[in-house]
Length: 145
Image (cartoon, rainbow, N blue to C red; front, side):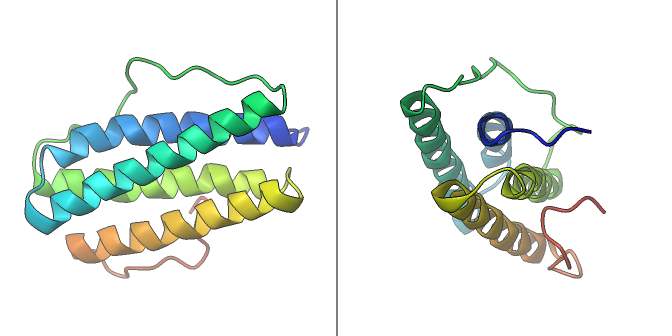
C-alpha cells in the first residue's frame, strides 16, 4: 500500500475534521451544563483546525476536499450516555487521521499533526472520565485497537 502524500494526508485529516464538527452538533444537544460547554469548546476547536487546514491546503495550491451536508453517525445519539460515547469516538477517530498524517508529513506539517493528535487524545481522555469509562487513557492514542 502506497503511503499518502502530505497533501493527501492533510486532506484526509480535514475530512475527519468536517465529520467531527457535524457530530458535535448532535452531541451538544444531548448534554447540559459544564459538559455541554465542553462539547461546544471541542466543536470550536475542530472548526479552528478545519479552517487552518483549508487555508494551508489552499495556500499551497492543493486540493481542498469539500465538506458534506451530513455524515453517518456510528450509532444513534439519544441521551447523555450516547452523546459522551460519540464524543469519545469522534476524538479517537480524528486523532487516528492525524496520527496517520505523521508518517507523510515533515517540518511544520508534522508539528501540526502531532499537536492535533495530542489535543484529541487529551480530549478523549476527558470525555472518558466524564462518561465514567475505565481506563480513561489508552496506550497509543490514534492507533486502531
